[in-house]
Length: 136
Image (cartoon, rainbow, N blue to C red; front, top):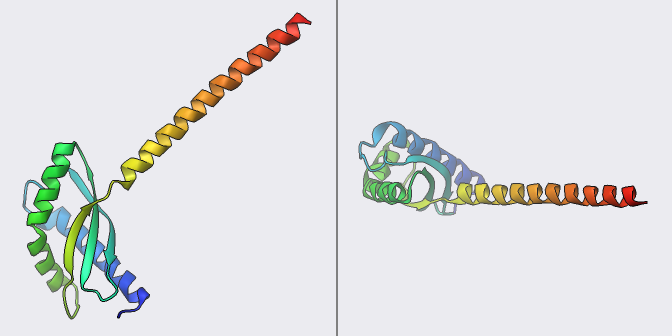
């Protein structure tokens, strides 16, 4: 079992290398269909498995196409990773789509909408108070 410090260092190294591969080395057009970025890498404690979380910007069709391209390029990416990263065994990799950025944007838009509604309600309440003061 590797230490948590080593696991996090290996995860960061995998993240950096896979990001570089996505930018320069993968020739599959499907991977370029949506803008792809590696958001996180989760490596198991024994360094045998790695989940690579990717954020894909684009339509649902482009996302599906990009994920299919990543799935087909998994063998190439793993072999390249084995050459670039000095480990006893190269971890098995799995790509997972990360939609946390979209969820964050959705939450922010809801908060902004609530904030606007509150400002409108406050403005109406102030007008009501002003009308009440004028009546006296």
